[in-house]
Amino acid sequence: MLITGVYGTGKTSVCEELAERLESAGVAYGAIDLDWLGWFNAPELHAAAVQRTSLDNLAAVATNYADVGVRRLVLAGAVRSNAVLDATRAVLPFPLRVVRLTLPLDEIERRLSGAVTVGRARDVRNASRWLERGIGADVGDLIIANDRPIRDVADRILQWLGWP
Image 1 (cartoon, rainbow, N blue to C red):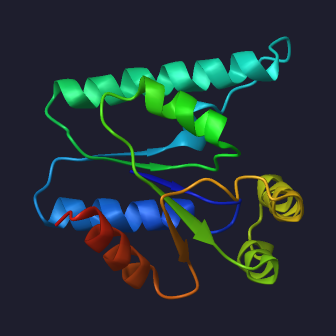
Image 2 (image 1 turned 180 degrees about the vertical axis):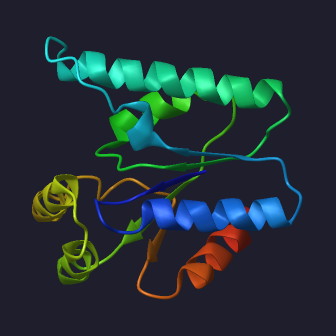
């Protein structure tokens, strides 16, 4: 399953909570923050080549997990369109269900304002731009407001998926 949403909606935090729940239940799983699979700098590459490399990395990691018996992946990443989602689905050895987290911009700003990295300030700008332009707004099978305790959000997702 993929947890998506604009920057700052809590995708990684919910992914971590789901991973903890699956581990506690003794379920074989893999957890992947998609940002890390595409975090590199190659200035000569165009955006399409960067996306292709990220997808190739995801395909390799997902296949490695599948080879050792993992049948449940919890992915976290901001997906800007259904075309990007389709490309992501195409590289996975499993069917993919998608949860989009939502949160008002003022709450995103509040959550990220205490972060000390330059990247978090950029995330706030990107979240604002995505929300203004409706980027990623049509992505997701289930939409959940991440305005409650993470454990409650995780409970709702696990219930929806039918996972332990």
